[in-house]
Image (cartoon, rainbow, N blue to C red; front, side, top):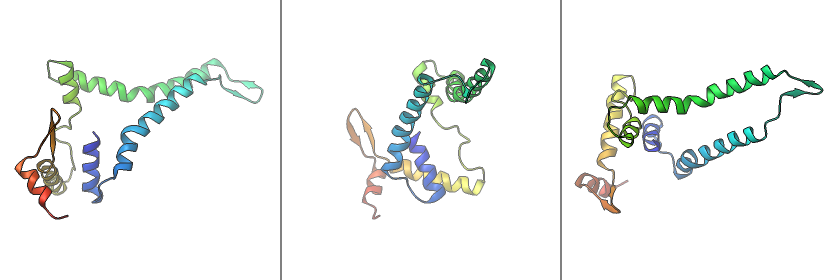
Length: 147
């Protein structure tokens, strides 16, 4: 999810997005887009230009175009969840949300550098379990490293 996007941006741009961008991408953008979608359904009026009323089929074509583009994300999410090998629904969702093994840069040299970044960030990650902070020896070394 967001952690992977930020990591990939750090690799590509040598810059880690700040809290503003992370909150915007994870909260404000989905909420605002959802509100716009609901508003467009609620405020719908048949298509009209000055005194000319367009035929119903023109509205139908517009709704079909909007529907085809809107349904893509939930449709492909469902397909990816369906394809997972896990026995439980929560396991299928968890697996579908993970990047595939071939994810990353296509160029082998870039892929190697990217994998090094991924490995170093995973080593330095502080984990939480049942409300407790778990710091591995590798993460402790990262925390002591000068910036």
